Image (cartoon, rainbow, N blue to C red):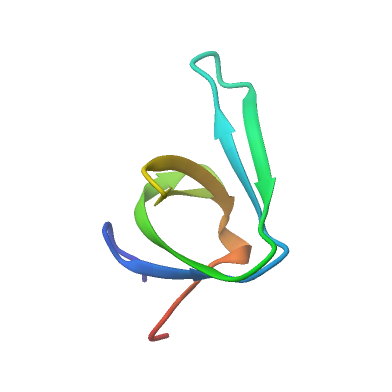
Length: 68
């Protein structure tokens, strides 16, 4: 089970979404290489994560803990 502030590995080719205040997609990016992110919480079927001082949403199925 993942907890708030866990360090999470995100593989390459994963999409990260950023939402605007009205819940529409403001921006997105597709990772070219794997990264580590900080888990902030859950939002439906997605995890809220912090990467480079920005909050992103990533599908739960794309993430796994570094020490799982």
